[in-house]
Amino acid sequence: MENQTTNFCACCSFKFNENDLYCNSCGYPLQATEEEQKKYISNRSVKEIDLEDFHKNIKSATNSLYWVAGVFTLGALITSFTLPNKEDLAAHLIIYVILVSAFLALAVWGKQKPLPALISGLALFVIIQIANAIIDPVTIFSGIILKIIIIAYLVKGIKAALEADKIKKELNIS
Image 1 (spheres, rainbow, N blue to C red):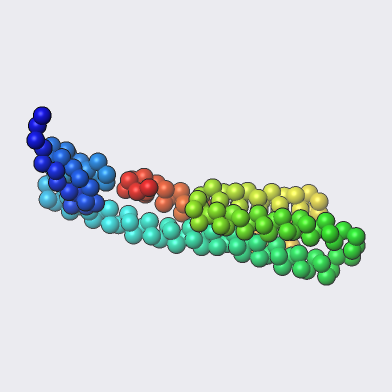
Image 2 (image 1 turned 120 degrees about the vertical axis):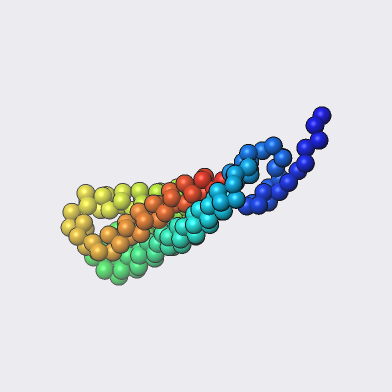
């Protein structure tokens, strides 16, 4: 059996054997020239900075799920005071409680799994808007700016989560 010396990667401190060409953990070029190694570390640093920016966008988008829950809570309060037919009040409030709970659950889930939570939140929000438009077409235009802002934040968060996943895969980060 050959006696191989064990070294540690200059980039991630992962153990590697003397004859390894690349680090098995981060892909650092162990047998490359010093210039190539510096370039690798420089590129990795840039990607890590990009990853931090994407995480900020993801956090902002998952926070927008809390904002959506807040908007629906406000909608429930307004409905409870302005609904002309008080017999329908209980049904409306139950729907609002379900929606608020769903968006709060998605926001909490978004802390661990942002991409599926944001996609689910966007899909749920769009489905609600379509259902409202079918029931009462005038609702398409009420609060249109707020709806556009919510959709834009969720889409921006989804894009950031996709980019973050791509960079994590490139950097071999779990």
